[in-house]
Structure formats: structure tokens, C-alpha cells
Amino acid sequence: MLMLNQRFFVLLLMLMLTANDAQSESHVSLREAVDEASVLFGQGHYELYVPLEQLGLALQRDGLHAAAIDSFRRMQSLVHREAGVYSTLQAQSIEHIIRSQIAQQKFVAADQQQKFLYSIIVREHDGADPEMFAARRRLADWYRNTYRYDEALKLYGESHRYLSLQGDKTLAQTSLFLAEAETLYLSSRCCASGALKQAIEHVTAVTDFESKRRLRLDYADALMLESRTQAALRVYKQVASASEPLLLGLRNAKEIDEVRKKSRPGYNPATEIIQPARRESGWVSHNHQQLPVTVGSPVTLCASEFATIYDMKDFASYVLDVKVHVDESGRAQQVNVQGNAPSSLRRYVSAVAKRSRYRPRFREDGTAESAVLIFQQTFPGNEEEVLTDDLSGWSSLLARRTCALIDGAMLTANY
Image (cartoon, rainbow, N blue to C red; front, side):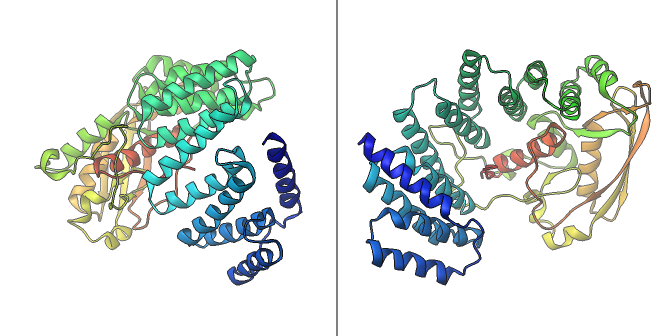
């Protein structure tokens, strides 16, 4: 079986190296290529692997995910035929399937595929193999994005132990600490700043200056969000140049709920919010429910809370001018909100602005001073782009996932 695996791998590698990555053919021509290969070599021949992948990816790009999964399943069956049901060579087709399942909001099916992918890696590789590190990290990120924070942190810890045994202090270690910090933040646990501090200690000499500076700013922002103001200001003074104040946002999911209560008179979560159904595995069930849309920039809110009151198409016409007086400790001293949005939206944005923490304004010498932050709050009707996983975006990311949790749905993974 080992020799068969090696032979199949070599054949696949040769086919993939000779394949043209820039596919411009229509679905029809790609299907014809699959049919021709089937006639020439047979339905179960490995020569179908690359044509099937090209067809599946083209269908996936065009949003035809059910048809794309059919092609990826056929790829997977070729591997099963040639190399066995548990061959790691099927990893590529499984990853393609997962992407389409996520796009279809079939999270339970995607979860099963994630676990199967991890299981075949475990069968094939020792715990100290690099492949196991990559598999742990992928599954941990999936758990983080599906609210299973305990499981994610456990796998991150195992990944740390692997890198420690390797004596690895490269960017892989830094990236791992950043992912762990985000998980701690999203789960409203203390302390994301601790993981970021460790990330700073593992930054390598080859890392460029700007990346190091950004990481230190992330660390200071985390300290500020944790209300460790003096520690944050000390770090800011080391790395911050002349700059205007910056909105960091609310600290955790509990604060988002508190703001929502204050901005909506008569708010009663017991009657107005659908509590998420939970499975034994502890993650949110989304069956037959649409993902909630979060709207608003730079303050993010749950659109579903207002969907029954306002036509979502009207959101694009709402604009608020927000003025916040921020002191040298990063706290809002005075907030003024003006604009054409309904009173409930004005109250929400005002409450967020008052409860949020800020990066204060800095002079050229790095010392903080009070200043006025002015921004325009918009309410786009369409779903915004997925945020990057940097700290400055964490508050909005937290709000998005809190919206999903409250609505009994699940946010798509950044897969």
C-alpha cells in the first residue's frame, strides 16, 4: 500500500504541475475535458483528478456549490480507489468540499469533514510531525470560529508544545500566540494581552520594523481594552508616534449586551432573543436559519434587532455624525451624536461610544493628550466584507460573532 501511495502521489504531482492554473474555459468545456478523460482512461482512472478539480473550482467560483461538491467527491473517490479510504492524499478534495459547504451554510456537514480530515492526518503522522502541527492549527481555528473556545485553546496549547520541542521562535509561533489572543478575547476571558506579550517575545530578528511596531500597538490596545490603562500608556509611549485618537471598541460580549439594553427601552432578552440551541459538542446549531447581517461602520450592530422595525433597504440612507471627546487615558468624556438615523440607532451608537475604550491622541514625543475624535457612522444595507484578524478589528469581530450567537446562528469561518 505504501508503494501504491507513493506512485499515486507522484502521478498526481506531475499532473498538477502540468495543469494550467489560469482557467478560462467555460463549464461546458471543462465538463467535456472530464468526459474525454473518462472515455480515454476509464471512470476510475487517476487522469480524471485534475480535470475534476478544475471543473469543481470553476463551479465553486461561480457559486454552484452543489455541483462543485459532486466534482470534489469524485476526486476523493479516485484517491480512495488508488490509495485507500484513509489516505491523506484526499486532503485537498476535502478542503475544497469544506469551502463549498461553508458557502452553503451547511456547518454541521463542514464540521464532520473537518474532523474527518484531522483523523486521517492523525492516522498517518506522529504527533511531532509538521503535518500534525498544521492539522492542529487548522482544526483549532475552526473550533474558534464555531464558538468552541475550550477545544480551540487546548489545540493551541498542544501546538505550542510542538514548537517548543522544535526550539521554534519563528513567525509560526508569533501567529499562534495571535490566534490564541483572539480566542481569549472572543471568549471574554482574561487575558488576551498575555498572549500578545508572548508573541512579542518570540518575534524574530528577521521581522521587519513595522510588523514589530504593529504587534506592540496590538499589545497596548489589548491592555487598554482590559482597562489596564497605565500599562497600556507605557507601551504606547514606546511605539506610538503623533496620531489622532482611535476607537478600540467594547471589551467583551457582556458589554455589548449591556449597551443593547440601555439603547432599547423595554428590552427583554428572555422574550426578544432566540436562545441558541446547543449540541453535546457545545457549538451553536444554525439549522434552517439565515446568518445575521451586521451593519454599521465603524460601530457594528446586529441588523436583525432592527429588521422587524425598519426596512433594511433604508439603512443605506442613514448617516450619523459622531463627536467624542477622548481624554489622555483613552476614556470618552463627552459624546455628541447627530444625524438622520432613527432614535434607537442614535441611542445605540451613543451608548457604544460612551462605553468604548480608545487609543488616545499622541504628540511627537510619544506623550498622550486629550483630543476630539470625529467619525461618520453609516448603516450599509449589504453585509460588509469579512474583517481581518488584527486587534484593531477585534471589537467589530466580537460584535459580529455576538450577533450570530444571539440569533442562534453561526458565523462563517474565515476559511
